[in-house]
Amino acid sequence: MAGLDDIIHQPLRLRIMAALNALPPGTGLEFARLKKLTGATDGNLGAHIETLSKAGYVAVDKAFVGKKPQTTVTATAAGRGAFARHVAMLQEIIAAQPPE
Amino acid sequence: MIDSRQASEALADIREIAHRVRQSRIYNLASLLMIMWGALVFIANAASFGWPRHAGYIWIAINVVGLAGSFVVSAFTHSRTGVRTFDLRTLMAFLLFFAFGLATCMLAHFGPRELGVFWAIYFMLFYTIAGLWVGFAFVVIGVGISALTLIGYFLAGNWFEPWMAIVNGGGLVLGGLWMRRE
Image 1 (cartoon, rainbow over the protein chains, first blue to last red):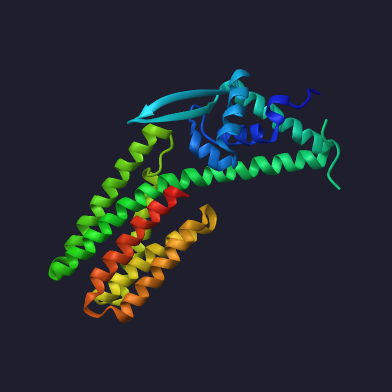
Image 2: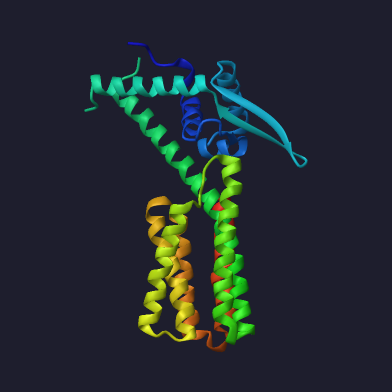
């Protein structure tokens, strides 16, 4: 049995991946919306997105909409796979030892 | 390694976030349609007030424009997000919903003022029921506009159409903008 994914398991990174995985493949979330959905601060969110990006789990796209910079974060195929395995692992833990 | 309680909490967190994302997407897409229909309802009510003899034609034209506009908004959101909001099935649902309302109006022999109230409340009933599944904002908008419509019916006198333009049309536009903030 494979272990939990240490990169995804951190609570905020789990929320980020859960949010991105709720979207159709190839669709991303703007930084501001992701911040609101996860309840994170700017700095905290940026740092955890960086970690996920380095692991190849998310792609970060920076563009200008008019004069405003806009950062969009999208789960990669590798990220979706890792998240699915992480969720399956969580379910296995519950099945093996149901909560009291 | 974590225990099953922590695993359950993590899964609950995932479900909660996924629910919020889905709701946010529904609000984002529905708000565009709501703002468009709100503007059209505002125009239709204002025009009916100015040209009461042509109110029937005005509303038919507005509904045709609204349906066409819904397809355009759907195509726009589809190109951006890959999600289609207004397909053939939605059109069929709209036509069935509309046909039932039309049959009710014919059987009940409503006057012009009652027609204005009926269609507003009928559509808001749909919003309210949909809101029970997809999000609280729909319920607030549906119940709020229905209540204001009834107030106008009893208290607005000869200014019923302008009242409805503001309350129904303006209400939908404001509701749509509120949803976008949510």
